[in-house]
Image 1 (cartoon, rainbow, N blue to C red):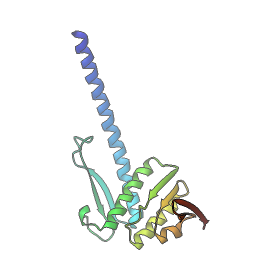
Image 2 (image 1 turned 180 degrees about the horizontal axis):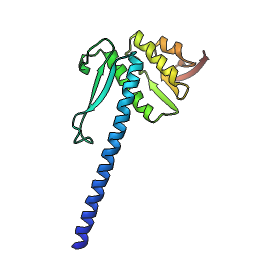
Image 3 (image 1 turned 30 degrees about the vertical axis):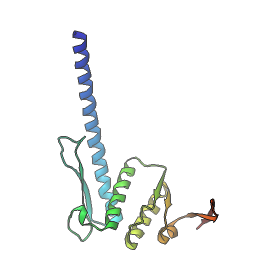
Image 4 (image 1 turned 180 degrees about the vertical axis):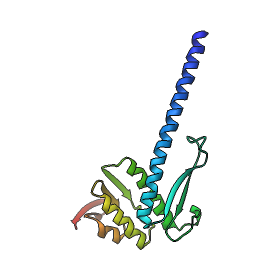
Length: 171
């Protein structure tokens, strides 16, 4: 019986240590992503401010995360009040904030910019261009502006039913 109680106590101690480690690592990474989110947001929106906040700082591993943004010239407002394109650009900023923490050699994005209006699309493409020196981006798109910003275009066409053909063009 003593062995079982000792093993249970040791197990509880290990669980507590792991949970503490998870909390500290989560907070450390959350703070880095939060800082990156503000930086990327400012690049994509050409100003403004953005930050993430925990809904319950006492229970960081199970609480929600609030996204707080203020585009340039606008007041701080709820996410529900932004247009679809603005929400998409905010989500893109958050995605790149996480990637910035641990840069990747390549990134595949499938129509990520589809909801953006022309001015936001131009800033998105400029952002991709700046970071394409360290990360290779493969973008699936139907947007002419994004295609014009690319180094190489690959198109897939079907000349015969069931037979796809890939064409490429270096710009």
